[in-house]
Image (cartoon, rainbow, N blue to C red):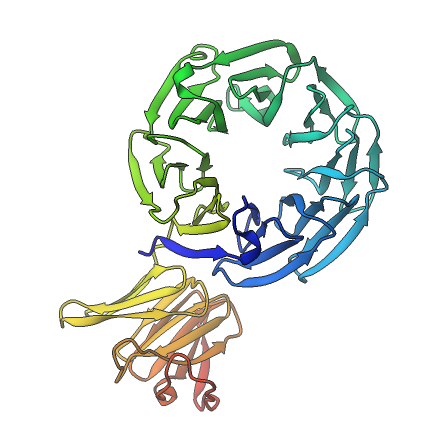
Length: 485
């Protein structure tokens, strides 16, 4: 399997840290911003899809819960920019505030967008109803960070060194007294028993990069402060996972797991010195049950079920200016890593088990857009085919390979093939979503919606190289559909 999916590098990004966000839910797009006044949208192949022009440098962005809308805020602007992924269009919303935006975050469960400003004001925008709720003076200084709970409670941190908890209308429910510096908010729900009714909502905050402060949202005065060994360095990044567990990365390369359960609090459940000199970021994917840390010139991936089990080490020998931030897609298939010199590396960490056989010939997925065909028994050299889409099925016959998704299939010829050359025939649309497909030397049989469509494929064979300028094939002369009884 190919680990490196693609690398993104733009001239405008050179020498700068990148701000980027994977599309939620689908993970089809990744939005990336550098020091220039644009946000560039790329697809999962690394191809640039579009870009959003801004009046100033991008200072924040976030995808809504369904991955439909990307919200972007920029320096020197009081507007909010929304990019609709379904139609690839950008709209602009006037916040109604005169100060610049500094923080933006979508709700986890509702079409609510929270936007903070450099003067401590707050706007809650409902994408569904277009209703705006301005809250002046939520904080006295710049709003810098925050998070939503699944019950639509909003925690905000500010340069005025206070923490506020608000409801979805913007009303303040709790305010925590001053600390020297709040950074990196997280909320977590701990369930007691099997019912969510007995859950406890906890807030965690990194204070001065040295202390992790925990408190119950209903009892913020009863705080727990967790301090760590000095030789670990500063708290760089941390993530909640499971039922009350926290994974923490420290600047000197240490990687620590703690529990917030009363009986275990204050004890380290796991510790590893993952990186010799420094650790820059950590990330967790519950979809693949893995956690990752990056530092020095490597990424180390652990199994969450057994943290001592290191499933992969990825070396980046060319990155000599330092690594930056890690982020997984929701499905856990792709892991992105930004660097301090302005490049973005995307790695393949999960691949669907997908393949088919015909006799002793095998065809199987070796990358998201790559199928390998081999025949070990007849000692044939493996053939690698770069396909058009991320397939949901593969079919192989004596002369062809077919891949497809939804109601479309792409056919590739294997016969009389030169080394390194494959012949792409044609893509065909069917009348329903394809469940499976079988091939022989002459026919393809596609199963969809309780029916089988049978059509000829042997007559489609033509000699065409991968990058031929144009090629036309006649419509299929023979095709029939039969219902399964």
